[in-house]
Length: 358
Image 1 (spheres, rainbow, N blue to C red):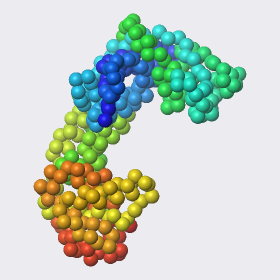
Image 2: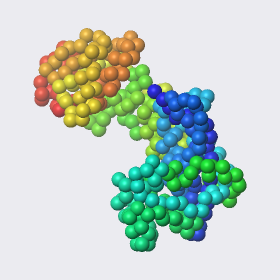
Image 3: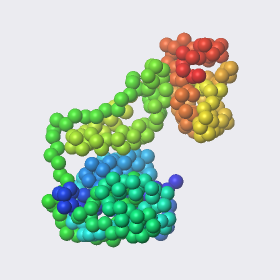
Image 4: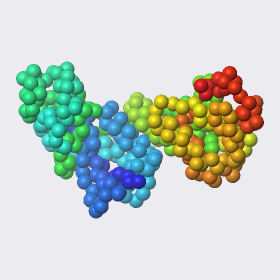
């Protein structure tokens, strides 16, 4: 599977007539599975510092799973984040004065037709004149001054891709703008944010935790939990600069220290409890040929499997098991009466309700 390779980062900025600082972020990238490897610059974000941080953390989250990396190999989210913090401390003046807005279906057309109505509503709310809105609606081109009307661009976040309105060659801006730098004071005693997991356990790279009813379920793979943690961290970092590096360091330490489940744990897989989404049904059906986790006991509602330490070597079988939706798999420590597969075979509907399987 291919990944995006980042070879350069650049922060540019400008100040509007309303004294608002807007950051235009550029990345130089190439796709690992596309040849030849020819890095190119693209605008990845146009916005104020809060949305800029949101974009940076969103991309940083992709580093944990390997879909975003450097030329030399895998990178951690914290390294990617630090690279952008250095860029934001040393921005360059953004020299583009006007942005063209137009509605259409062309690859580089800023506002795609499917987003036209929503975009026009946002532009009207942001104060664009009715004659300009009518011109856009009729397929015409409207030039927007970034100094005077940056809000017309900012209001379109999520609808208009930055590279469709800012050409990549503007990454060549080389006039330093130290007065526009983002360089907040980092306090030594900033609060650390933690992942809210109830009594977590670990099996290989997967994390088990208790749900709201204190039943053991699979929370996710470790890398996925870290990715979600990183993606949502921007608000905390904005409020407490410097907290991200401390928080993710503690999170990684906590993950390593989660106790592993013992050989006397078991998992009850409810194959009979089908869900409406096709991928969930497919995950259950796909598990059938991979019953390699010991001797399964068939019940009226599914299968029970005893997990032994040696079974963690059967990685593909474990992977298939954890692909099954968490609500279909109940993990049972030895203290639970039905941990024995013989007991599971005797469970009826009223017994299974205690495990919230139905």
